[in-house]
Image (tube, rainbow, N blue to C red; front, side, top):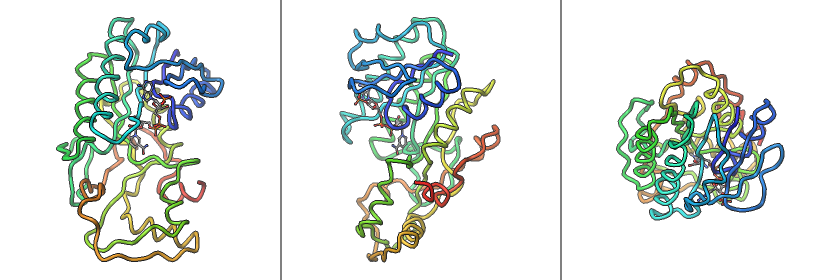
Length: 276
Ligand SMILES: NC(=O)c1ccc[n+]([C@@H]2O[C@H](COP(=O)([O-])OP(=O)(O)OC[C@H]3O[C@@H](n4cnc5c(N)ncnc54)[C@H](OP(=O)(O)O)[C@@H]3O)[C@@H](O)[C@H]2O)c1
């Protein structure tokens, strides 16, 4: 198949390599000229500049959207997840129909704050702008009329991306008191595995959660890492009510992707961090 990966960064590059190795022709699109590695074909395009989109090869079978904003503010989120997304959707709608458009979303679309279990059918009322904008992006994707699937990923970790582990190693991580705060995560290789798996499904569902089996308490993850790294963690009285994790605190279920036949390489953070 001819596959476009729009936003060929950490996840996109790993996905592109996997798909190209499986025999597909893959274009990796990003703004900077530092090329994604072969066998991905580099495509230097800013999706915010509609006139540049004519560089995107035609026809395509699959397009995946996985851009990330440069800054963590509302304007950056809007330009990435609405303007750039709309430009790509408008371009693709005028062409031969895709077999599938994949939009990589996030578990930030859930607004639950008390550790509730959520699945693909749970209510989505995010309070933070990031979740609200991501939710609107999902709507834009489905409104486009393209055959689409949305994958809501938890926090991605893996080789070269182990912020939490480094936080513990450096002794900066702190165990917080107060009600439990849960974290939903996915190893990069499972995010790639799920995306390639979904591309092979005959009739994929519109939405899947991409998280591992264990939406563990943050303190549990920190304690496990500290034990492995032989680090003693400091303890603080209560969690910061203004921190981002307090705004969204839910436990995401992966039953739907499991039912579709996907088997995790790293079922929990324990297996994942052991190899990171
Ligand atoms: N990271 C996480 O923990 C996490 C959690 C949940 C969901 N996700 C989702 O997973 C996806 C992939 O995340 P990631 O961590 O792989 O992101 P990443 O490494 O930051 O890659 C994003 C890519 O988007 C490109 N990009 C940004 N703006 C662009 C534009 N206007 N035109 C063209 N390319 C542009 C960037 O390259 P240039 O700067 O060269 O353009 C970069 O290569 C994203 O959709 C993100 O929302 C991530």
